[in-house]
Image: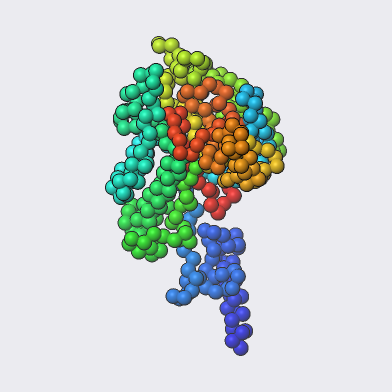
Length: 408
């Protein structure tokens, strides 16, 4: 008799689930009142499984949605260094989020402010950018050493002098900072926030919401090389039909094989901040073209078709990947990423064996070209590498985030 009663409840639960869900099927945002696996009522009593209310979160602060898909990665440019380290290959990159701009000086100063207040002095000191990257023995760049990071006029210029390790530490702080703010808002400690809610029973004061609560954003992080290159290509702008055909690839993050704007009132203007030739960083006074002798405002040039600014020029950008020459043999075709020396160990490049190589598991890829690079390096397929604890005046970064729970 009890079994029949239980089965009846399960059937009723399934009916109620169907009745309460949009379209008759449960979804992440409308799971129904009853489990579709057991028929148990969610949150029926203290011991019941509680399913928190959930509305698909918008992108976190500063992020732009990048719709994933199939693409061809690799260099389209002539391999002038004869490295053969980025052969063309077809891959699929899942949808993700990426910063609209490079991380700016004002963002790094906010980071330093929090560290100085809440961390040990040595942690704060380790996070300081190396401002001496501006110093050159035969150049008068001394003012940038003092002023570039902290002077208000440079607030929204890209932060430089940060190593790959420092950039990763920043992403950890940013994740915690954003989620702590969301936790305060979820517990009624703040105004209506990113999720459009004012308060919740999911948290108590001082307690961080669980992942299941739906109040926690995934981690900010450095983009993988594949994500970065895919986002820079922005081939979505060349997709004119629905037959999955793309008629051409892009040499730069914009159409055409030129670095000047071919249209309208901005015709002839450079589309990125780069070094035009030996000794020529900006043009002639009275008719400056790219207008930037060094870095520039993070919104200074037209965005690509994903809405991302300065995916070519201004500063190179760190990505997650350990550097290795790439081949079809050691590359996955779905979300490719090299985290270590798997299938291509660092001993293959060991200088102690008589090889003259800088390749190891401590060198990371950077991409995009900078204010100090010629146009060749603006192509998304080009790549270089540097030790993860080193920094220069030409490398910055931007953050990315997974697109959790959706294939949109």
